[in-house]
Length: 130
Image (cartoon, rainbow, N blue to C red; front, side, top):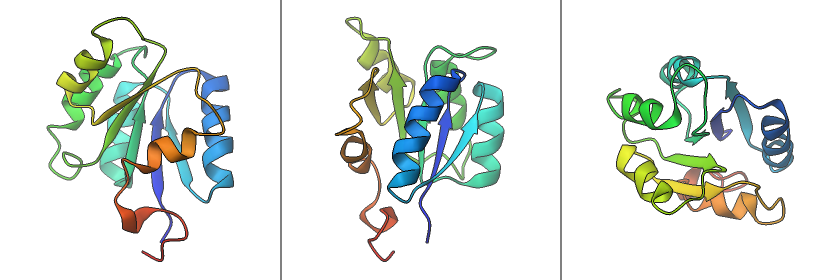
């Protein structure tokens, strides 16, 4: 079973880097360019994990996380804020909006996969046989 990750990100370079790292590790990455598109994809694709930028057009990441938590099939899916917002209180604001975790950009390519694996159920990691 392939682990599906939805990355809601409007910046092409950020998406490319994350997609490159995760695809090389055996994950399937789908992209939403903004909050509304991401919500639609989350509903249709039923991802194992959602990576969520906070600075998004149309609907910011906080509102997107709150909306995702209202959808029964997605409400328990881990959502990790992946953002350059690193001011005091930003982590708490993301968690209060419904995010499960918070990773600051720029990401470290050497440790990024390990960082996101802590949010995935053990059976949904590549090579875990589940």
